[in-house]
Image (cartoon, rainbow, N blue to C red; front, side, top):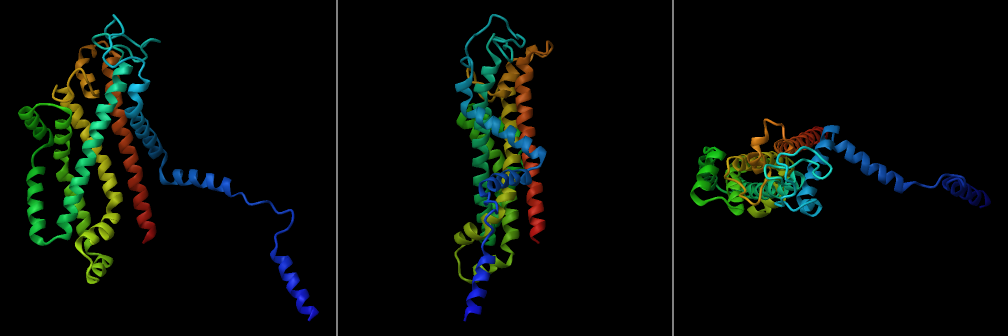
Length: 310
């Protein structure tokens, strides 16, 4: 009896940690874990792209608040002025502060492109899912309709629509979305058709699940990552489309201006190397390069995760 009690006590003593054992460091591990997950998820170039994208998104929201001058205020008698303490990015062809003009223009460039991209991706993905899960005749009708739309070049479509109905903020957003809905439809339909052949979808069909349930629960969650990459690419295309339209004078109209408008109206200072021409072009370049770096990092991470899971 005493032998059993002694054995039990010895077991308990060995199970307890020593008195001088260090206390657990859960908070530090958690903080390091969050940072390591972020570094693991994105490469160095991906982190640079993420920083650039977050920076321009923040500027789109708070740009008018932090701008040193009103966007259309005449702040200097010197046109195409160079960098100075009063005007960090110089002045434009009318003597307006270029830093303020760029900060105000970000909400049009980024905001319009983001809204149009969201509309194009959501509508295209919706019809792609409908085509994939519905009957053959629905798929054929939708596919032929969007094939006809995608055969029209986006810039030609935008020029025709704007020439017919005029240029305005809602019209620009609608035209940009309409031009890229067919591409989003084709990508989403292709992904959904492949997923529909997998076993778990066939099991859901055998259980008698409705098409809406299959599309929402079984198909859509498994095509999110490729569609996010496609979303980023379409965002870049729409930024370039809207900037090109503004450069031609068909985009955002005065007194408002996006980055493409700023390049067009200050093109006369190009020979002098004026910041009024260079800075909006640099803004367009950094935004598009940043989005592409982020997309490329997400693609590679998705490919590694998919390969590791097989």
